[in-house]
Length: 79
Length: 142
Image (cartoon, rainbow over all chains, first blue to last red; front, side, top):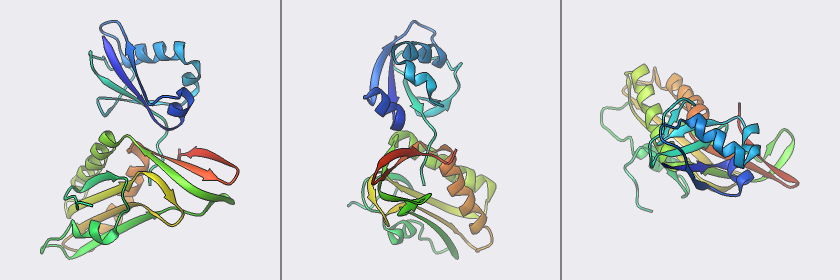
């Protein structure tokens, strides 16, 4: 299945891209996705990230479906 | 700019405090509290040239709306909540965020206002990069 992954702020700059599409086996979780991303972009593993699935905060064990949008959320700084 | 009736908004346009307060207009309100976040010219002794705000806009607006719901669940006296946050490049002195809360009476509006800005800084997916004369950094309070 295909997952759209979005990056903002420091991780976006680190990767040089705001989004990518990651191919994953069925029944993958956010953790599976992160493991795959860190294999390609080892630096991602050094960041304190939270995750959102389809624009809501989600835990690492959240199961993903084809077409989901996952965002990597570094510490926020609004206000 | 088309004045949006939406109370929870991320915008790349200049924010008018009066215009945000006007969104709460209702004959039943007797008090409005307003927080205005402004770009500060220095942090920890370093001169700031400008800030760059980046937002995950679709999720940020949903998170602002969630905070509005939390405020009214916690303080049923609060009638309406409006939160407008700026995105993009902001010079020193520019308004970065406006929060306005309305109620029939003044009693609860101050506590609810503090809660709202604290929650915003905690959960809303907006990021701030400080650009100094000699460098730049993404900033968070955590």
